Length: 440
Picture (cartoon, one colour):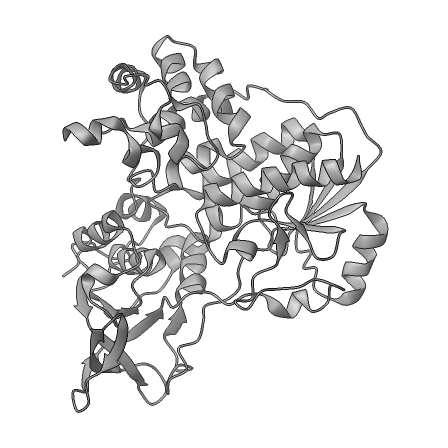
């Protein structure tokens, strides 16, 4: 049973969705940074996809050099503030901390990173300037973490950069796809504004590039095009009743929640289908919106879930219940959802098998499908010579992130099939370097 009441105002919403990594004050940051052993060849650095010099930036915090600390972070990761909040630090940098070997709480690297970068953003400290103009222009499609990271690096290389974003706000997954208790809308947007002031890239909002003519226009106007469009809508589960009212995809549900906040409707009894990190977020968010009961239903066992353990713990602590080894057969209802019919399953040699004759119905008034995301393959067909692999991901040269159409480069979820924000940031920076080498 959820302990949260339905929020009726922005203040109540913020209370229900209070930050799980709240901003440290200077005293907390000093004492936490004092715990760092400043390891030589630190494993936390290797565990970070952007390879931030973590011992250095922590030592800079401890010595009072906040400006230098944020500079160390941003030199490696242009979305250092967002990543400090949304990264699964428990399995990346903090998961690699040597304190884990001694059963001691690891250094709170994410919160320290956030402390330094928040200070830089708040005080508008300028670390970068665009490079000397090189006479080249690049178009970036998508103002998400990959697109922004690529744009920043291209500007440092002296490119003119125009970003084309389909929505009316930037930041992609960090704004539209991450749970509000990980990062607020204001924090996500402030960092993009901070970067745009320094680097001077242009963002064209409500500019959905999708047709052959639009791609051809970009090819003619620009010397290179970067594809940072991410993934698409939620995968269908292809069962009866999927189109009933109150049956939502997790991606769409979380996006609406981020924008409409306390005005987002939830059910009294919610069933979330899935076992990944997005399912955990959707379940936890439903509970925090005031749902009376939230059930997380997964077709395998609890130990086989794709979600990180700490994400499942977060959902459980929000009042979410687990229902394992069940597969949805039908979403029940006449006009809108009234329940889900399941069949019990077992896992044999890694394969899920249904157990005949074990169907049962669980009543609910809202269903959220957290069943992965579709690739945006309809777009790719409009780019001449662009190839995808058998899983619908854009094929790239892993040395420079160039696609099979030499004018296009790509990074982020569209090439990986879905990873963390920090992976998109790291890969897109390398893609920008690939563009610079190719054109210069």
